[in-house]
Amino acid sequence: MEQPVQTETWKARSLEELIRILHQIFAEDKVSVEEVQALMESYESNPEEWLQYAKFDQYRYTRNLVDNGNGKFNLMILCWGEGHGSSIHDHTDSHCFMKILQGNLKETLFEWPEKKGNGEMTKKSERVLRENQCAYINDSIGLHRVENISHTEPAVSLHLYSPPFNSCNTFDQRTGHKHKVTMTFYSQFGERTVCATGAPQENN
Amino acid sequence: MLGQAPPPVATTERPWGTWAQAASLLRAQRMTKRDRGKAGRPGPPVRTVALPRGEQRDRGSRGHGQPPPRGDLPCSFRGHRTLPLPPPPTPPLSGPLPAGLSQWFPALEVLDVSGTGLTEMGTELLSLPCLHTLLAKNNRLGGPGSLPKGLGQAPLARSLRVLNLSGNRFSEVPPALLQLRGLRSLSLGGNRLQGIPPDIQELHSLEFLYLGGNFITAIPPELAKLPSLRYLVLCDNKIQSIPPQLAQLHSLRSLSLHNNLLTYLPREILNLVHLDELSLRGNPLVVRFVRDLTYNPPSLQELAGRTVKTRNIPYTPSDLPEGLVRYLSLASNCPNPKCGGVYFDSCVRQIKFVDFCGKYRLPLMHYLCSPECSSPFSSASQSSTSQSESDSEDEASVAAHRMQKVLLG
Image 1 (cartoon, chains in turn blue, orange):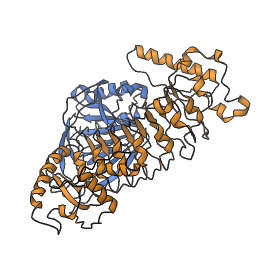
Image 2 (cartoon, each protein chain N blue to C red):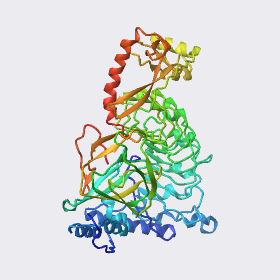
Image 3 (cartoon, rainbow over the protein chains, first blue to last red):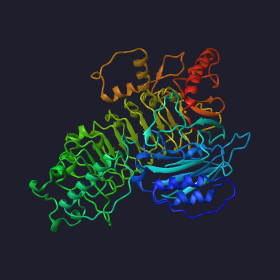
Image 4 (cartoon, chains in turn red, purple):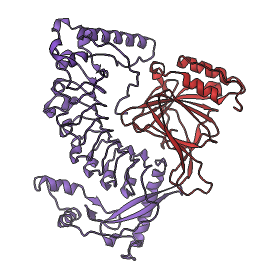
């Protein structure tokens, strides 16, 4: 994805249509970030269309694969129970779009830590994303932490990552130290995937 | 979460109406759900109008509280097990659950009255014979009488498994709640709780406890007496320290402590072998070594308690007042492996940093039963403690390796 080629105004009237248009867009050699972001925002969340993917876990947020974009992107739904949040993480040189389908999510942006980082990481900004809003981030913009700060409402978000990736780095806010983690899917295409994991994995 | 998958659903606007209209709407919704089931996809949870709020607003003229004669009830209605109540029209309505609820829905297992402006549950709750899930979040509950008297004797006390009172106005855990002996999942998130009552231990079946977003300053050690507790959320409070007894929560898999006022953790936290999740961000954890040499001499009660424990003096609950039996059960073992001692409240406190391969240094508070047990860091003895120091380092490093996978930075 480099310079925007042409920015059309898409309107996705359903989740199926959103996915169809995404396939169309990503079939091209060049894809515009603005175009994808506008398309994701245009889709008005309809729970009936995505409920089958929205599988919650008691203890932490879940990643539920919706579509694997012919290898060009991963589209997934994340389910955040009350108080669930991620660690600070990067995006392995990929583009990340995050659209709120239900509830609210707080996004806190951080600067990359210094090479010899041994101090508290620098917070750049924070905001609360509302239903149907779509945020965008990549490694050149910075790192972020995403959390459902509500104690009463669960939250659901739709994420698109391109190219797909299954590992990233998490960062300790107090020291800037990073730690590589592998990501897993709680479900794929609406089916629960049970992984045989001994150690807990960062569900990023 | 909260013991069940929550229904994330868009709200639907439906007109208010009479009982009969509500029943037909319910029937229609259930048919749609069945159709969707045939297509192999789960339908949306029932979230439509069930009980008419209009009748509550205008009790006198519409004869609220007078359900129609039994003959009018459609059979499918009687068997209905799930009942959500939609949010009222503005202004929000107060008042208890409508009378006749248990007559109309005798098989009710799930009741959702979230966001209905309730200020008190009312006595109708006591008549529901088999309710296992009660969702009452985002209401105006919290004043005295929010929960009806006699809750402990109602069928609910044995049947209720899930209770969600998040987003209300409770400034203390209502004592009536502690009579719900069958409770597995309890949420009081986003209320105004200042503390947790020691009697929380009465809820001995509790597996899931959400207390995030309150004003809690301290945790009673009695919380550790919940043998089945797997998920404990204490984030977004004002907690300054964690009692070491919390390490007795052997079933604990997830502990949420982020955004509190913790400067250190008890060393015993490394004993939570099943812990998969631990959130600590947003706490002013100390990063530098802290020397704390203050030592308050033990009280007479403490000295007596220590003697009972270390000499294994037998006693039964009938020998002592209940308070002392409880006190004795809260003894902690001195972590110094060379010392077989116990302590209750009086101890030497010392912070040691457990290093997780240079990535994360966790300040763990070591409670030692007396200055004689202190490490060489203190001004006390030097000789015999060197061996004990290395022993405790070994066990700390094993636990630290396990904990490394848990800390999410």
